[in-house]
Length: 512
Image 1 (spheres, rainbow, N blue to C red):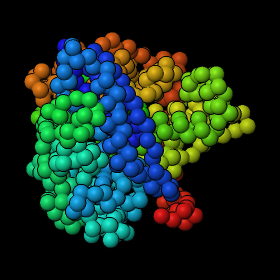
Image 2 (cartoon, rainbow, N blue to C red):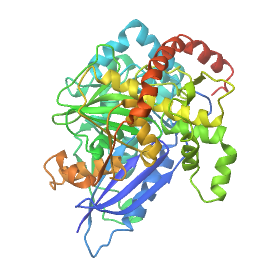
Image 3 (cartoon, one colour):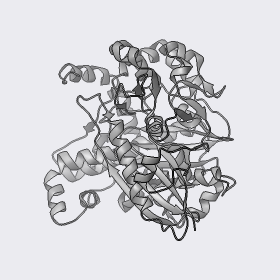
Image 4 (cartoon, rainbow, N blue to C red):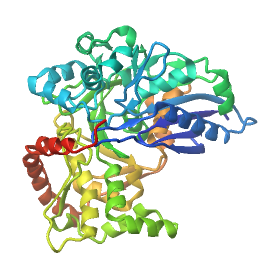
């Protein structure tokens, strides 16, 4: 019995899962780290802290492997998208990791949205016009931090930086590269026009490789610290979005994956590039014959955390004292409120928003408050608002394809309330696989293909295990059917004021 490790480098933590080659789990590790937010638009991380977290996660799960049973055949990576790290000529960071959630390039993205150049870039690269994109971050750094721009020799993402620390090589797989806005999805190479726009050259970017590419030559001291052979290959893997889709088993056309972690997404695989004329959904290559289209949202579980910390702080502390999960307590409170929260609507845009509105200045709001509403309504409305927003992403996706099945995963999937809410708001059956950590599982599947243990992605079906399906409740979804048009119309009206309130807030925010 040999082993494989899937590692998922997320926004708030790095997780690693130790599998045997039959997909059974033998070890799990989760290492947390902070998001640095010195002002409302900033969202950075220390790449060296994340490197240490990845080493510790690998070390912890490696210790669970029995060397008498077999060896570790490889480590495969799933990593957050849209991050940017600058490196100088000595390969030292010139920036922290600027994450997907960083909004400081909003004015650059807005300018390009207005003059049409953002849509043209989208047509070449599949990246919607939004400050999450590396291309917009680069332009912002060039304009606002010219000294940093000038002293930076290499521009990479977080995974590329981590792998450089492990191997001393700069390589990037095409799935991750396609999320930057610097990669042409038609030529499958770095985009000449985007490089010209940002003023960078091909020499400043990593070498492009495939999803199944194996990196070898691990630094011996790191291998020793982790506890496995320096010959152990690291398989490039892909983005957390694509690999979560694979780990859910949503690998066929029409199978839609809905995930809610810190952020969230609705996405599906297609067999060729599909560009939305309105630029509402992304389009990225994953591997031969597999393209992923969909829409990510900024505001998933992070909204629930905000509710917990700011509206239910006493309950949070009480739950801790009693050894209970505060989130379980909050969902229990929310379950006492009828579907639709008695007409209380929450637009969940605490951190701007990506799909489907692609507005970095979007702001959250409660609407419909009356004297009859209380905190219980507010927590349920927040949970419903997250799902309402995901549903509007699916509406855009339906214009490109016809869904045949909806599969869901993420931290929310532990909650029966959220599972049923998803089925009721989408008004479609929702299947929740019991498989653990879909991003790590998707990475492990890529490792199986890379190492010749599997022929294609269909092998994931035997690893997923039991599937639980939640049917829409006809007594409930009628409420949502009535309130969704209000949510959508209200969002359109509020969007006309997002720029104004965002500018007001920026004037009063701490300076960098």
